[in-house]
Length: 456
Image (cartoon, rainbow, N blue to C red; front, side, top):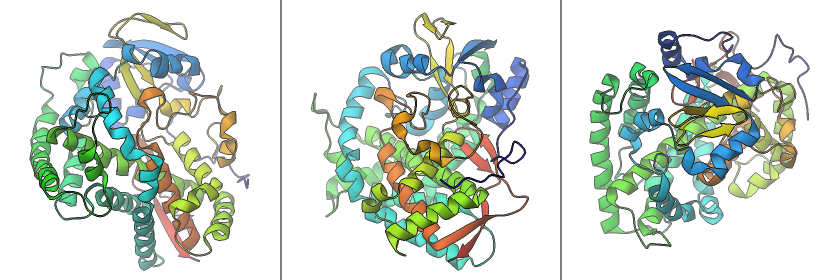
């Protein structure tokens, strides 16, 4: 694996300086509104567990054995936090991402076949076509710098819109995208009432207007779903067709229009933004380390021989996958996940009480000095042997029964798009335009990822 020997402590990929001293409730809220990563103490990259109180008792868990307990062994005792549910419920309802217990289980059983290896592989041509269109747009931009974040959002949204509604015009892509972006930008920010642990029934002002906009978008989505149900599936079933046909193998229950819509919106959000962010960060890292970029391009040239990547090529592009894995370690889209404890417990020595907030800071976990060698360094080679990784130390898609249902979809798409782009362009960083990692709901490169793309 080629390594950039200029990656010294003074030249590492962009990162956020984590806080060294505790802050009060008001200051914590202000910092969190600007960037959720601001609440992670630097000690979270060196200690297995940290506990404190900011309005409510909280614990940050970085110990893999304790994380395994949360995500695998005692899932029912650690449901998604109340704050997480309050932030996302107006947008995606009681879908797979929000639901708990029996309501989650039947939806998972119904949805899992949709993301089988066969179905995901069958969607490969859509991903290849989107990658090709993206490469053509970048080429058309000429020698000027291009914001590759915008390009990745466009490419992945093209994919999810096509595989969700087959591009049949029944669903207004732009309105969905705009409504979700508006919700994330306004209502998706933590309220001071959330930090203080105020009851759910007290309104959070920023979410009222955004909820109304989401309501209009949901009505349009319902109409599109009902029209498809009457018309029936096309020659190649898309995600909506597969969900309409799906039923819980245990109970025979099928999803209602509202349940279909909420899960489709979940797949649309999770199925394009998180992959777009991963690709944008991966391209930034390739431009940061030209040695890695060239080694990856050599692999791409050998496998693709000048054409766009396909689903069949993915197993033959291990270095591209390693770059994506490393981007997910350094810049995980879900930088922090939180749970609300239901019972007393001991997590790595932390005294857990009912209603305590239990956080897994994925951003800090990926940079933990006890789990990774030179954790702030960009080194895709650390993923050459995935079996050597300590389980529950790398969690870009979560783990346990609630592991991301679309992980294989996202990874296939990311490999296809990144390989296609590296096969056509040499990417160079634009001086003075480094992105800043900022998390509101997801970890985004604030300011965009501006790169010069030199055609090969």
